[in-house]
Image (cartoon, rainbow, N blue to C red; front, side, top):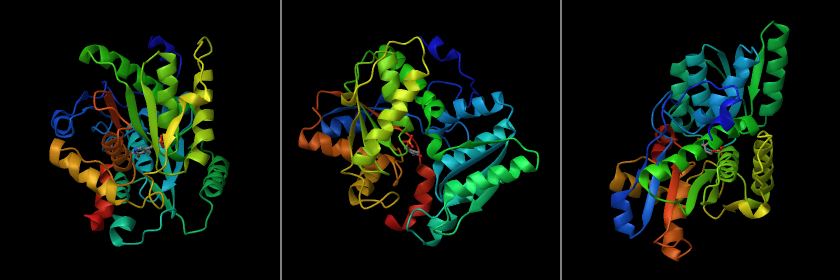
Length: 332
Ligand SMILES: *Cc1c(COP(=O)(O)O)cnc(C)c1O
């Protein structure tokens, strides 16, 4: 079945399936069945979900003979940090265009965490002042670089486009194999929806490989109203890359929540901080305050309120982000 993915240019950044196992201690504490897929575990650059997207995005860039990557994000972007690390590994030049999209000005936010790692990776970081259009800046930079003889490749916010989503189609295939190895069928797959590529890729993979699970995305950037159409479109485009597939997607397949987003992207919530402490205490795993802790808070709340049945097998996709903890020291 994985041959479905063989036709797409690909650069290996994650050499093995990521670990998938039951959170035994937390599950018995909550009387539930929670599994985790460790997409945060270190391969390159500290690990995280963007590496899966970058396998296909950089594969495409190299296939197109591009020599330079431009990507964009917030100052504490995990995606930017992982793109920089993967570019160093793949011997591509890299420009990060980072905007002040999150209203946090303390010293840790503006210099620690991902920004420290970007500095160590020694690529080109363009920090824009508030109000400057990040996308336009990246386009202008690309034009300038073309004029000076380079061949740049722009990766959108979060690596979220149909090619990037292929990384999570592949992840769904891994999950299907791991269900067999663990002798479990997941009823729910719970993940973060930021720029929508992870959610779109997983739901596409669930359809393409006929998994049983319902996929629940917890929005941390946009409200449902804005995120729904985007996620649906990304998933439709990703599925349409598989020309011979009969997989069909309907609106009912996109299930998402925005009630754990808090006041804004990048602003932690009390429930998220509690979730970080809970998972650290019971399992020794570090959730992050911007993405994964908000989704995990939704998962815990769902178990408490009966939205999720305690007998269900629930898989949480741990998408990474722990370097951001150092940028949010003040919340602990
Ligand atoms: C980017 C990111 C997400 C969200 O993934 P999208 O594909 O942008 O929706 C989730 N968790 C972490 C840690 C991330 O860095």
